[in-house]
Amino acid sequence: DPNSNYAKAQGMAMRRAHDDEIIKQAVGTALDGDGNAVAFPAAQLVGDGTTSINFDIVTAVTEKFMNNDIDPDEDKAFVISPAQARKLLQLTEATSGDYNALRPLTSKGYVESWMGYTWIVSTRLLQAAAGAGTVAAFAMTRRALGLQMNKDIWARITEDPSISYAWRVYCASTFGAVRVEDEHLVKVELSETI
Image (cartoon, rainbow, N blue to C red; front, side, top):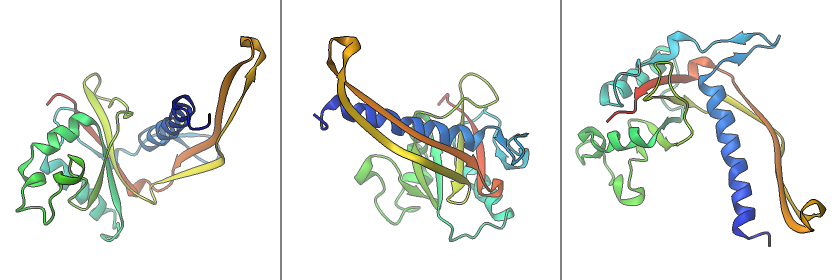
């Protein structure tokens, strides 16, 4: 059954593989046109992994975008871990009606849009360079990363003779991601200790 939980789980696993590739390329080492490694630029780094997200860190990221002459109307997203989302909910500036014109917590249980960023919570973020107990979150615009989909997710369900002709779901995708414009991406190293 194409609508079975098993088939859906295969599709979701491929989506997580897409997320992993995007995250790895966002905060990791990229390759130039000649195949040479290009490290993440130090000028685009905020935080050292010793503090959790706070109002000052968010404004420092915004300052980076301003110093890079990024159009203020450009849509921006901030990708954080669940621990950082919890910390964000403890910030008066993020949850108070004095700072938010809308009721941000009533729809999803976390602040989805605040300080000009769309907040995305991911459990797939990498550990920051500071070591254990840290996370490499990041903020970006749409121009920061490129994603190429040579072949989108496809699935086949067929009998497998190697396991007594039981039904088997095959799922695959061909894709890749790359950092395109470093000025449009800011890496934020945060402590996961709340």
